[in-house]
Amino acid sequence: MNDRNAIGQLEEKIGYTFRNKKLLKQALTHSSFANEQKINKWDDYERIEFLGDAVLELVSSEYLYRENPRLSEGELTKMRSSMVCEPALAYCARDIDLGKFIFLGKGEEATGGRGRESITSDVLEAIIGAVYLDGGLEAAKAFIDRFVLSDLEHKQLFYDSKTILQERVQKRGKGKLHYILVEESGPEHDKLFRVEAMIDDCKIGEGSGRTKKHAEQQAAYQALLSEKTVSR
Image (cartoon, rainbow, N blue to C red):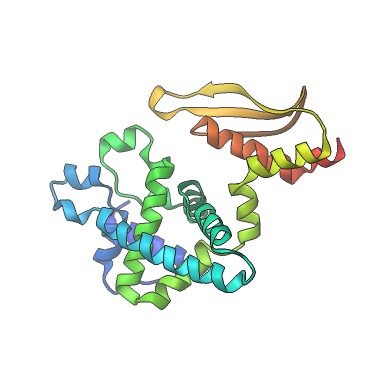
């Protein structure tokens, strides 16, 4: 996919057309690509991600303050941390298939960088920064509202699935919750783990991911959606 096609397709996905296309290209450019292409170091996403992180914190803080008038500062901080942490942003990035639009160097590509949560979450923040520079705070807020703050109840269930499942199992006194690694596949640099969530010897959910932690999260989320922990 060439630069113009990638930028055009992503603009269509996010519903925002950049006046300055260079800002979006910068937001999508990993340092490995910049190094390989021997372009200016400052043309990768790191500086613009720094700005996007600040804009995201402001917009999400305002949203939580407005929507939760009875919560304390500590509770609001905890909620915000959960909403804008790396796994949460990577989850949002998957909604728009962001990984396929990132400009990566050959080495980073070969080691699975396109699906790495640390990269996709950073790029999402960089896009927020790019939208802010191109269209101002209202445009950035519209992007965040649509892709980060939408369907928060469902996303919160996913973000905190392991904790929520543990609490439900303990509350019902239905046995011991644990996770079993049932399969590990792929080359060393790009492993895929498959995990089962268990209550004693009963399987209640299954998940897969590039890390054991993410696979466990997926398994817990499936268990919560299936309601097997309720009926057992």
